[in-house]
Image 1 (cartoon, rainbow over the protein chains, first blue to last red):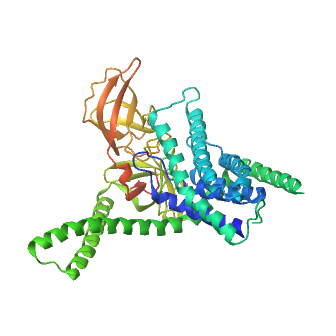
Image 2: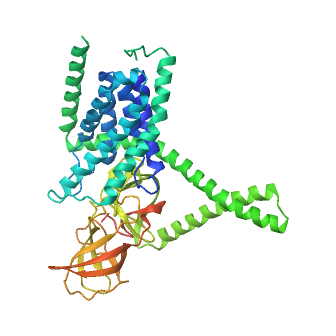
Image 3: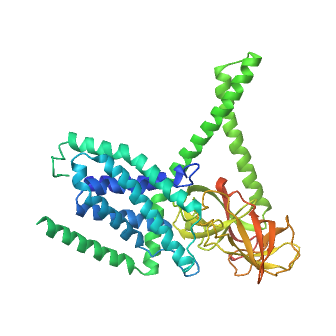
Length: 178
Length: 278
């Protein structure tokens, strides 16, 4: 049930992401889909995290996979693997989340989302110009901006989820029962 | 037990992933189309809310100005302010629609008017979602324009919506020619330092020109029609600067369309009077 709620939230996050635009000054897009996914990855067991990773990656690829003149920037399904990667890292920090150290996960969400954007960039650049990695300052500003904004937005979400989990008796001291 | 369950989960996940990787192009397109179909009602609703919110904010700004004026003239009146705000909203909408209808009538192309209902939420791709799809005779590969010039081309389709690849995306290359000259080349986004420019006006270049082409700032760049994706004669932008390089010439172009401010666009479905699409 909670997995379905997270999938619905990720879908709505993706819709909302179409309207919130970029952060003024940084040019970074506000990545709501990864934030919600990473919340799920921190709060839920491996099974559910993989379901979320599959759904999030598939949704993203459905919107962004575009073969141009027979060439693609990113293989269809590639984003699923990326989400599973960052989800696994966040899921590895789950024991700390269950102990109430939500702020570690807020920072990790920033770092992991920035990693997602960075890996996307590297793959796109490699596919477009294999031996000419372009690293203008704007790329770093955008990736750094993504990390900061994500951590900032993720903090209240992680705090709330942690609080709600405890109130609902879903978290015990060391183990989760969601 | 827990470890075993995790291993099974990973196995199922990898299997599903392989199935996605080996999807045939046709099934992949179906999947994308179906997902875009699910998204489009939400995007349409979101677009309506977004435009109302923008109107409201613009209204608030105007309200400040009106209040200052009303204080000075001592004719402040709540009802007047509310009515004025509402009328301003309608006026802006009316001007926009008149302009759209004007273009539809005067354009030499058969066009389908569409509204932008979403912008790409990605850092690295430049796309928009429009509220017209296959049921509105929109097809993949058709050119998308505004009265100011070229916007991009249709990529993914659902019944009632479509994704448009913008000319500000590095993947969108357009065969262009310089008005009043025989020079032709390929228009694309300047890569160095610009791969990230999906939220600002991009710097575009017309490449593969003659090294000593007599080009000057202000000359217009039009689609040449080569490659048959874009009909010839659509304005792309104007030359800002011409650089003579080692092997060829390159013109830096300022796009004629305000990519960041797109709200209404037109999909070119063919020439007026022609039976088939280009």
